Image (cartoon, rainbow, N blue to C red; front, side, top):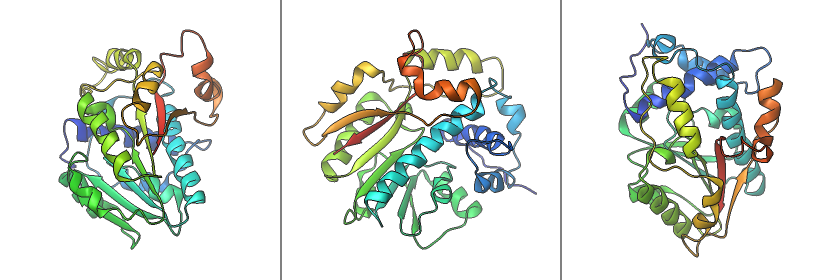
Length: 270
Protein backbone atom coordinates (compact mmCIF):
# COMPACT_ATOMS: atom_id res chain seq x y z
CA UNK A 1 0.00 0.00 0.00
CA UNK A 2 1.42 3.37 -1.03
CA UNK A 3 1.46 6.52 1.04
CA UNK A 4 -1.19 9.21 0.80
CA UNK A 5 0.86 12.45 0.86
CA UNK A 6 -2.01 14.46 2.33
CA UNK A 7 -0.87 17.69 0.67
CA UNK A 8 -2.96 20.60 -0.59
CA UNK A 9 -2.44 24.23 -1.57
CA UNK A 10 1.11 25.30 -2.35
CA UNK A 11 2.68 22.11 -0.90
CA UNK A 12 0.73 20.06 -3.46
CA UNK A 13 2.69 21.74 -6.24
CA UNK A 14 5.63 19.55 -5.16
CA UNK A 15 3.64 16.55 -6.38
CA UNK A 16 2.82 18.37 -9.63
CA UNK A 17 6.46 19.07 -10.44
CA UNK A 18 7.54 15.57 -9.31
CA UNK A 19 4.96 14.00 -11.64
CA UNK A 20 6.16 15.88 -14.71
CA UNK A 21 9.83 15.45 -13.81
CA UNK A 22 9.34 11.68 -13.58
CA UNK A 23 7.47 11.62 -16.89
CA UNK A 24 10.58 13.16 -18.43
CA UNK A 25 13.01 10.97 -16.47
CA UNK A 26 11.35 7.79 -17.78
CA UNK A 27 12.05 8.72 -21.41
CA UNK A 28 15.02 6.90 -22.99
CA UNK A 29 16.19 10.26 -24.39
CA UNK A 30 15.57 12.23 -21.19
CA UNK A 31 17.32 15.53 -20.53
CA UNK A 32 17.33 14.76 -16.78
CA UNK A 33 18.03 11.24 -15.53
CA UNK A 34 16.43 11.13 -12.08
CA UNK A 35 16.24 7.59 -10.65
CA UNK A 36 15.60 8.88 -7.11
CA UNK A 37 12.51 10.77 -8.30
CA UNK A 38 11.24 7.61 -10.03
CA UNK A 39 11.79 5.65 -6.82
CA UNK A 40 10.03 8.35 -4.83
CA UNK A 41 6.88 8.59 -6.95
CA UNK A 42 6.40 4.81 -6.84
CA UNK A 43 5.92 5.02 -3.07
CA UNK A 44 2.79 7.19 -3.29
CA UNK A 45 -0.83 6.17 -3.42
CA UNK A 46 -1.98 9.25 -5.31
CA UNK A 47 -3.90 9.75 -8.60
CA UNK A 48 -1.18 11.75 -10.34
CA UNK A 49 -2.54 11.61 -13.89
CA UNK A 50 -6.18 12.05 -12.87
CA UNK A 51 -5.26 15.00 -10.68
CA UNK A 52 -2.79 16.80 -12.95
CA UNK A 53 -3.64 15.60 -16.45
CA UNK A 54 -0.95 15.19 -19.07
CA UNK A 55 -0.14 18.90 -19.36
CA UNK A 56 0.99 20.53 -22.57
CA UNK A 57 3.26 18.36 -24.77
CA UNK A 58 6.64 19.81 -23.73
CA UNK A 59 5.78 20.47 -20.07
CA UNK A 60 7.81 17.55 -18.64
CA UNK A 61 10.92 18.62 -20.53
CA UNK A 62 10.49 22.30 -19.58
CA UNK A 63 10.23 21.41 -15.88
CA UNK A 64 13.22 19.08 -16.20
CA UNK A 65 15.31 21.77 -17.92
CA UNK A 66 14.52 24.11 -15.03
CA UNK A 67 15.71 21.49 -12.54
CA UNK A 68 18.83 20.79 -14.62
CA UNK A 69 19.71 24.49 -14.61
CA UNK A 70 19.57 24.51 -10.82
CA UNK A 71 21.76 21.38 -10.81
CA UNK A 72 24.30 23.13 -13.03
CA UNK A 73 24.47 26.15 -10.72
CA UNK A 74 24.88 23.92 -7.64
CA UNK A 75 27.73 22.06 -9.34
CA UNK A 76 29.34 25.34 -10.38
CA UNK A 77 29.17 26.63 -6.80
CA UNK A 78 30.62 23.42 -5.35
CA UNK A 79 33.43 23.48 -7.91
CA UNK A 80 34.45 26.87 -6.52
CA UNK A 81 33.63 26.02 -2.89
CA UNK A 82 34.41 22.37 -2.12
CA UNK A 83 32.52 21.32 0.98
CA UNK A 84 30.25 24.35 0.68
CA UNK A 85 26.85 24.69 2.30
CA UNK A 86 23.77 24.39 0.07
CA UNK A 87 20.51 25.55 1.66
CA UNK A 88 17.42 24.39 -0.26
CA UNK A 89 14.46 26.57 0.71
CA UNK A 90 11.04 25.01 0.14
CA UNK A 91 12.71 21.94 -1.31
CA UNK A 92 9.50 19.97 -1.54
CA UNK A 93 10.11 16.63 -3.28
CA UNK A 94 13.13 17.73 -5.28
CA UNK A 95 15.99 15.24 -5.62
CA UNK A 96 18.79 17.63 -6.55
CA UNK A 97 21.08 16.27 -3.83
CA UNK A 98 21.26 12.83 -5.50
CA UNK A 99 21.48 14.17 -9.05
CA UNK A 100 24.42 16.39 -8.15
CA UNK A 101 26.09 13.60 -6.17
CA UNK A 102 28.87 15.68 -4.64
CA UNK A 103 30.66 13.71 -1.87
CA UNK A 104 31.64 16.83 0.08
CA UNK A 105 28.53 19.01 -0.05
CA UNK A 106 26.73 19.91 3.18
CA UNK A 107 23.00 20.06 2.43
CA UNK A 108 20.33 21.76 4.52
CA UNK A 109 16.71 21.28 3.43
CA UNK A 110 14.15 23.78 4.72
CA UNK A 111 10.44 23.03 4.39
CA UNK A 112 7.16 22.93 6.25
CA UNK A 113 6.68 20.07 8.75
CA UNK A 114 4.42 17.85 6.58
CA UNK A 115 6.93 17.96 3.72
CA UNK A 116 9.89 17.32 6.00
CA UNK A 117 8.07 14.29 7.42
CA UNK A 118 7.49 12.94 3.89
CA UNK A 119 11.17 13.37 3.05
CA UNK A 120 12.16 11.56 6.24
CA UNK A 121 9.83 8.64 5.46
CA UNK A 122 10.46 8.25 1.75
CA UNK A 123 13.98 9.44 0.93
CA UNK A 124 17.30 8.07 2.21
CA UNK A 125 19.19 10.31 4.60
CA UNK A 126 22.96 10.70 4.69
CA UNK A 127 25.29 12.32 7.19
CA UNK A 128 25.82 15.34 4.92
CA UNK A 129 22.08 16.09 4.80
CA UNK A 130 20.00 17.85 7.42
CA UNK A 131 16.29 18.64 7.51
CA UNK A 132 14.82 21.70 9.22
CA UNK A 133 11.04 21.90 9.63
CA UNK A 134 9.61 25.38 9.36
CA UNK A 135 8.84 28.27 7.05
CA UNK A 136 11.54 29.77 4.84
CA UNK A 137 10.36 33.10 6.26
CA UNK A 138 11.29 32.03 9.81
CA UNK A 139 14.75 33.50 10.29
CA UNK A 140 15.63 30.79 12.84
CA UNK A 141 16.92 28.59 10.00
CA UNK A 142 19.70 31.09 9.36
CA UNK A 143 21.38 29.95 12.57
CA UNK A 144 21.61 26.41 11.16
CA UNK A 145 23.92 27.49 8.33
CA UNK A 146 27.69 27.17 8.50
CA UNK A 147 29.10 29.73 6.04
CA UNK A 148 32.78 28.77 6.52
CA UNK A 149 33.13 27.13 3.07
CA UNK A 150 30.65 29.33 1.22
CA UNK A 151 26.85 29.37 1.02
CA UNK A 152 24.47 28.81 -1.88
CA UNK A 153 20.76 29.26 -1.17
CA UNK A 154 18.34 27.71 -3.66
CA UNK A 155 14.62 28.42 -3.88
CA UNK A 156 13.09 26.38 -6.68
CA UNK A 157 9.34 26.82 -7.08
CA UNK A 158 9.00 28.94 -3.95
CA UNK A 159 9.47 32.68 -4.36
CA UNK A 160 6.50 33.28 -6.69
CA UNK A 161 4.09 32.02 -4.01
CA UNK A 162 5.32 34.59 -1.46
CA UNK A 163 3.94 38.10 -1.14
CA UNK A 164 6.24 40.67 -2.80
CA UNK A 165 7.31 42.12 0.53
CA UNK A 166 8.01 38.60 1.87
CA UNK A 167 10.03 37.49 -1.15
CA UNK A 168 12.10 40.66 -1.34
CA UNK A 169 12.54 40.75 2.43
CA UNK A 170 13.84 37.16 2.34
CA UNK A 171 16.27 38.04 -0.44
CA UNK A 172 17.63 41.00 1.52
CA UNK A 173 17.88 39.01 4.76
CA UNK A 174 19.89 36.24 3.12
CA UNK A 175 22.15 38.72 1.30
CA UNK A 176 22.96 40.63 4.48
CA UNK A 177 23.49 37.47 6.54
CA UNK A 178 25.82 35.65 4.12
CA UNK A 179 28.25 38.08 2.43
CA UNK A 180 30.13 36.36 -0.37
CA UNK A 181 27.26 33.87 -0.80
CA UNK A 182 24.79 33.41 -3.61
CA UNK A 183 21.09 32.69 -4.11
CA UNK A 184 19.33 31.14 -7.11
CA UNK A 185 15.58 31.14 -7.63
CA UNK A 186 13.08 30.87 -10.44
CA UNK A 187 10.61 33.59 -11.29
CA UNK A 188 7.40 33.84 -13.27
CA UNK A 189 6.50 36.81 -15.45
CA UNK A 190 2.89 38.11 -15.52
CA UNK A 191 2.48 36.78 -19.08
CA UNK A 192 3.55 33.27 -18.04
CA UNK A 193 1.21 33.37 -15.04
CA UNK A 194 -1.80 34.12 -17.24
CA UNK A 195 -0.76 31.48 -19.77
CA UNK A 196 -0.35 28.70 -17.17
CA UNK A 197 -3.65 29.49 -15.45
CA UNK A 198 -5.52 29.44 -18.77
CA UNK A 199 -3.97 26.12 -19.73
CA UNK A 200 -4.38 24.25 -16.44
CA UNK A 201 -7.80 25.53 -15.39
CA UNK A 202 -10.52 23.31 -16.80
CA UNK A 203 -8.09 20.68 -18.13
CA UNK A 204 -7.40 18.87 -14.86
CA UNK A 205 -8.71 18.60 -11.32
CA UNK A 206 -5.73 20.61 -10.10
CA UNK A 207 -6.22 24.31 -9.43
CA UNK A 208 -2.84 26.09 -9.38
CA UNK A 209 -2.38 28.22 -6.25
CA UNK A 210 -2.26 31.96 -6.95
CA UNK A 211 1.12 33.50 -7.64
CA UNK A 212 1.94 36.72 -5.84
CA UNK A 213 5.50 37.77 -6.69
CA UNK A 214 5.79 38.13 -10.45
CA UNK A 215 9.15 39.21 -11.85
CA UNK A 216 10.07 40.25 -15.38
CA UNK A 217 13.42 41.14 -16.99
CA UNK A 218 12.79 44.82 -16.30
CA UNK A 219 12.76 44.12 -12.55
CA UNK A 220 16.37 42.92 -12.26
CA UNK A 221 17.91 46.39 -11.70
CA UNK A 222 15.34 47.04 -8.97
CA UNK A 223 16.27 43.78 -7.23
CA UNK A 224 19.93 44.79 -7.40
CA UNK A 225 19.06 48.03 -5.60
CA UNK A 226 17.17 46.36 -2.73
CA UNK A 227 20.27 46.29 -0.52
CA UNK A 228 23.95 47.32 -0.63
CA UNK A 229 24.65 43.69 0.33
CA UNK A 230 23.53 42.60 -3.17
CA UNK A 231 26.43 42.87 -5.61
CA UNK A 232 24.89 41.43 -8.78
CA UNK A 233 21.61 40.12 -10.18
CA UNK A 234 21.59 38.19 -13.43
CA UNK A 235 19.55 35.70 -15.38
CA UNK A 236 20.99 32.28 -16.22
CA UNK A 237 19.89 30.24 -19.21
CA UNK A 238 19.27 26.49 -19.43
CA UNK A 239 21.40 24.31 -21.64
CA UNK A 240 19.92 23.12 -24.93
CA UNK A 241 17.41 20.32 -24.57
CA UNK A 242 15.61 17.97 -26.93
CA UNK A 243 13.77 18.92 -30.09
CA UNK A 244 12.45 22.39 -30.95
CA UNK A 245 11.39 23.21 -27.38
CA UNK A 246 14.82 22.23 -26.07
CA UNK A 247 16.54 24.30 -28.76
CA UNK A 248 14.37 27.33 -27.96
CA UNK A 249 14.76 27.12 -24.16
CA UNK A 250 18.10 28.99 -23.88
CA UNK A 251 17.19 31.41 -26.70
CA UNK A 252 13.75 32.68 -25.64
CA UNK A 253 15.07 35.98 -24.28
CA UNK A 254 16.34 36.88 -27.75
CA UNK A 255 13.16 36.08 -29.67
CA UNK A 256 10.70 38.99 -30.10
CA UNK A 257 7.25 38.14 -28.83
CA UNK A 258 8.54 35.32 -26.63
CA UNK A 259 11.06 37.17 -24.49
CA UNK A 260 8.40 38.19 -21.96
CA UNK A 261 6.65 34.81 -22.13
CA UNK A 262 9.38 32.78 -20.52
CA UNK A 263 10.18 31.57 -17.03
CA UNK A 264 13.34 33.08 -15.58
CA UNK A 265 16.07 31.65 -13.38
CA UNK A 266 17.85 34.37 -11.46
CA UNK A 267 21.17 34.31 -9.60
CA UNK A 268 21.88 36.93 -6.95
CA UNK A 269 25.43 37.43 -5.67
CA UNK A 270 26.07 38.90 -2.25
